[in-house]
Image 1 (cartoon, protein in one colour):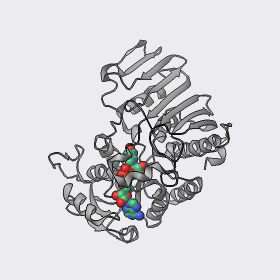
Image 2 (tube, helix red, strand yellow):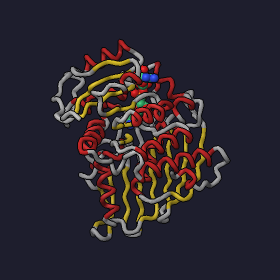
Image 3 (cartoon, protein in one colour):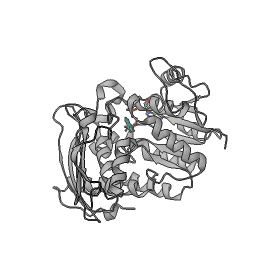
Image 4 (cartoon, helix red, strand yellow):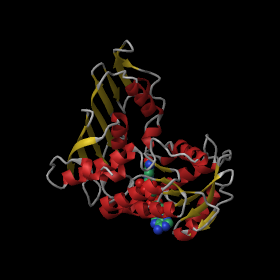
Length: 372
Ligand SMILES: NC(=O)c1ccc[n+]([C@@H]2O[C@H](COP(=O)([O-])OP(=O)(O)OC[C@H]3O[C@@H](n4cnc5c(N)ncnc54)[C@H](O)[C@@H]3O)[C@@H](O)[C@H]2O)c1
């Protein structure tokens, strides 16, 4: 392999792909789209872009100054290029599993935009391919890359809250389909996979990551959209019981919210943690801990970033892509978000159990049948 990881991006003219391309081509400070400037990464470069739309593809290459990027309108042709080491998949959701399996079969490292898949059959096919590969894989559950989630995990692992009892994670964020007429696929279940793959998976990823145990029961109630013309239910309220006894409530909708709402509560025998999204950063996180001798109060330095502003250029794309590049260059798996990691396998199991529960009158479902 070349000194730099040579990355090919499919879905390259899309809304998300610009920020991912900047993460692969530029250093830790990323690319400033306003001044069109940035320092090139010494570890990776965008070696190819692939999209159906040739004109927009050329524009993206020019806008981001991606000097070494070859342009493809056929994914299969890009995959056959021996000068590409890794693929970033950022196409509409229904193509994820197919494109991801092809990338692995072509011997490429794989960075997959969320969601993993849009049907349980596709999820199983991709999980089987992911287990067979020795290449680095990663799925972009981007909230886990925010310092606030990493710090919370550290406190839970240190038992700062004692034994965990229950957690509550929300994701409320309207999917803005008006940005581009092409984004209309987000309103269709057969293309998007539904509300959990579209966005509620972000809250789910946080809950599963923080609880860190196999799910044993899932109950889900879903409700139709009220504002936008989605052809599927946009609100999901999911109750998960884990093997370690912790109960998680994961709630979300992708139709309406005042603004982005990622509310987090963690309750343990010896402490509590609350992330309140609408407060200023200094009072956004409140927590208590008996072992740390801390009474319940605001922690002014805990949250140093707004979780997902709704603008992908302000997401942690640079951080997620760089972590992927670093593992791929070392020939290692991503322990947290590799495609066959415990967190990702558990998230997939909860998603398909929740789908089954919601479509059967909210009956409890044992997710072990989906825990590959
Ligand atoms: N992790 C996050 O926070 C986050 C945020 C936004 C979007 N996303 C994900 O990123 C992906 C892309 O979303 P988006 O908002 O950029 O969508 P988009 O519709 O703006 O872009 C999709 C792109 O894929 C291209 N495309 C479609 N079919 C193709 C094919 N067969 N071959 C090559 N290119 C093809 C389209 O032409 C388009 O340029 C989705 O999977 C979405 O879930 C993730």
